[in-house]
Length: 156
Image 1 (tube, rainbow, N blue to C red):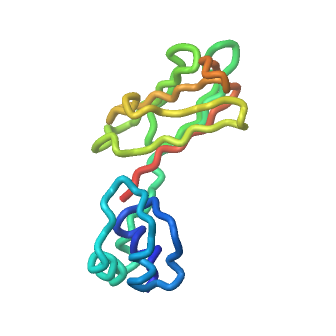
Image 2: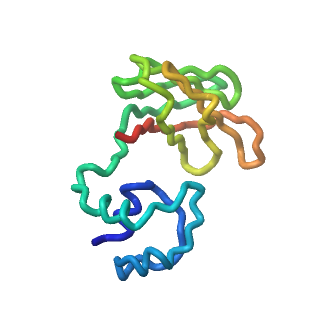
């Protein structure tokens, strides 16, 4: 048995403390459970351990892109086939549109540059047709980066 993997199968990114090295019920019982979700039972752990590895949820890249900005506007857009385009709506606000609507908003957007700005997507800025990347400096003042990369991922 792999106790840590069984927990991950049931509750991805679960938060707990202690050691899973012994991979037994005593080690499981000794874990300090800090996750907001309920701690699974030992029977659920045993059942999860029996599942084949392919049943583990995996992140899938849905779309990706890069925008470059100059003189207060987008000067270049490189996007994957799943995105229709991107435009700058205001300082620090980049709207990106999917070519086809997503089935829901249960996706994540990772936005990053060369560590000169904060780039993020709030839950309320995600829709099935588009998402909004917000960009600020490290004082939380909206700003336009020279270049910004982003990835859209979904777990299947």
